[in-house]
Image 1: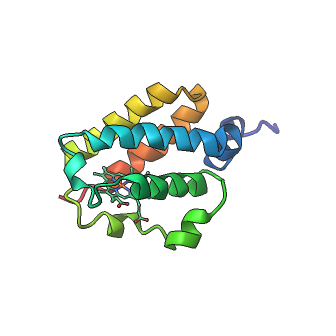
Image 2: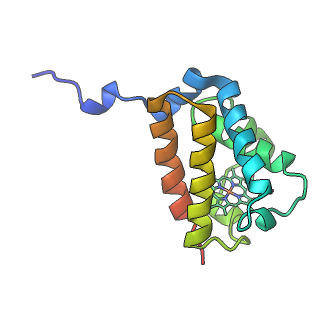
Length: 133
Ligand code: HEM
């Protein structure tokens, strides 16, 4: 009687920002976009040569999605991620490469293991949802 559900002990998405702060997301997104710039599949998909703005959009989205300030919404409105990715040809290999570069970036920035698990859970889910070819 009275045993709490297992989930209540686990880190939830809304707590990630308080664990790693703006700095954690900044380091992660910087590491990720440094890889995108030189990537043979993803590199050419990004419309702007200067990836700084794309990096800021992903960072603000993740900060918002994981319990931080809502600058993304102020700047971009509702995320509509499937719509905003519709013009990019995202097949299984593009999806897998995105995850591969993100996992390498996570290796580089060394976040706590429970935080990493929550981040990867969302990345895997959204990346699959964005496949459109
Ligand atoms: C599945 C592989 C993916 C590919 C190939 C891809 C590709 C792209 C490209 C080419 C852009 C345009 C860059 C720009 O903002 O100028 C973009 C934007 C964006 N992506 Fe992805 N993406 C992928 C997965 C994801 C995932 C998993 C997330 C979130 C968890 C995400 C979040 C975003 C966000 C927030 C933007 C900016 C949207 C906006 O406000 O315009 N993407 N992506």
